[in-house]
Image 1 (cartoon, rainbow, N blue to C red):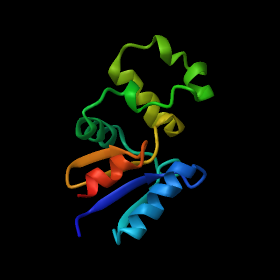
Image 2: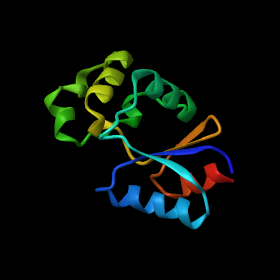
Image 3: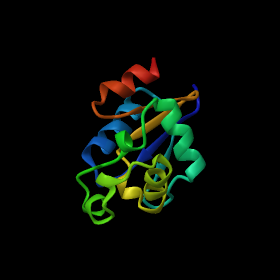
Length: 116
């Protein structure tokens, strides 16, 4: 099976459901608890390219840290990426990466599409 990585937050039901889905599909995944081991800036940039989205589209805009850092007004993509590296709680979850492609597991069908 292909190399699969999931950025996982065990406290998130969507993230737990994604891990369960991978297990049910027999996919051996490298489970990265990204709050404990945040992605580097380079990893984040690579995942954004795989997803084909902007940094803001990967952000959890309802998190209090988003408001505290006044990120709604920030237009510099690089600064948004830096904010996610420094505050991984801002990263939407779960993110599944496989063979140079990635998907956000909201909805979970995105992961199923990535695996086929």
